[in-house]
Length: 326
Image 1 (cartoon, rainbow, N blue to C red):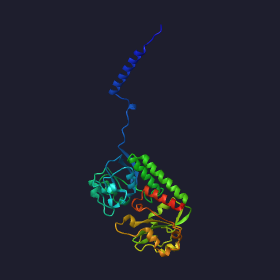
Image 2: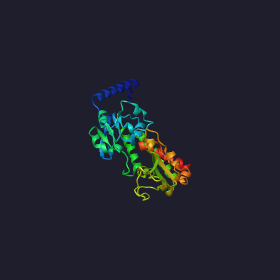
Image 3: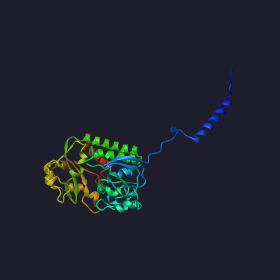
Image 4: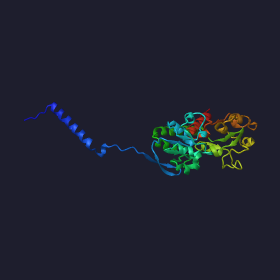
């Protein structure tokens, strides 16, 4: 005898089975059905060891200038930041917002303002590196700022800093894009240089100085030779940004192929000043130098000295590539 079951009967049975299963699910659940709760903290490697930090902190104290542009790109608005150290353009939202408290500068810090802001996380280090211990008493503090002593050098440390910030703020994709942009710009700049000599300079109050101690990290991955490197012996003291400046005749004698310059006054002065380009072109002793005769001078963006972060270096390498390829 052949057994048959009508389609209608199967539908009723299946519906009942689903209803029963749903009822049981409401009473109990299996581990496979449960979603793991999102982590509220992660452990990150800092310049002072591993630190457990909150994920996606709401109230952030942004003190490390090398992280400013990255935080801005991530859409982070801090509750407190050193407003005197912010670039004059691009950070109006931070400067003009009265609810963003002012932490002062590293020379005259206002740690009371940091405490008043009640941050969940303090991104310290770099210019605020000396205050890490005091800041740690206020809230969890991390120093992930790049330095010349970082493993792999300053530029590599910029990448690590950016990726760490990406993990903290759930912006890993954005962080990876910033790192990829830097690597692309670095390679292009390296490919465009071929062993030329370069004078790394700064200008301030109308004088030119050796800036090898400050921006030599720029040419670490490039095919350039710094004529006044700190350890080159070309200068007796290897100094930079002295009151007397660097004698123009000394530069003329070295006669570098290129110069890369940051304008200290453009970055820091609130008063009228002489731009770096004007300072360079007014040096009579340099009239016959290769770098000036051939217009082989790269003037870094005014914001470079204030931020020195991954955006600043990406832009610098783009400038170098454009200049050397011209």
